[in-house]
Image (cartoon, rainbow, N blue to C red; front, side):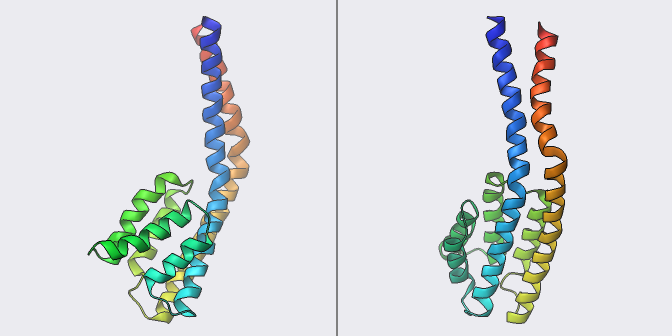
Length: 170
């Protein structure tokens, strides 16, 4: 019975390490997707001259999940509630963030971007999108560095933590 418990403990800690490494590996990919979404949003607003709601619907159709859910629900909620654009943006960020592998830096960039969304003319909006993209580029570099530095380590750490706990309990 001890061995079964030890094996389960080892599996659980190893899985935890692999799960954390998966989030580290998914973060750069999701930052790239977020940058792509903002570029599509920029094109829809500037060249298509679409309203925010329609532009977000088009973005939702062009980006993969879970990011597409964010933009789709954002555009749907704009119709349903009488809240301001920023309040809807904040609400969607709170709902979306736990589903993503994105970090606090990206959340702050998106929160600040949401404050400016729909508040300016086309050129002003383009400047804010470009600013958000440059901040996301910096976050991408940081995410790639963390991925290279910590990905293998956390996988090993999960396994070794399980071994340590087994040795302590036996």
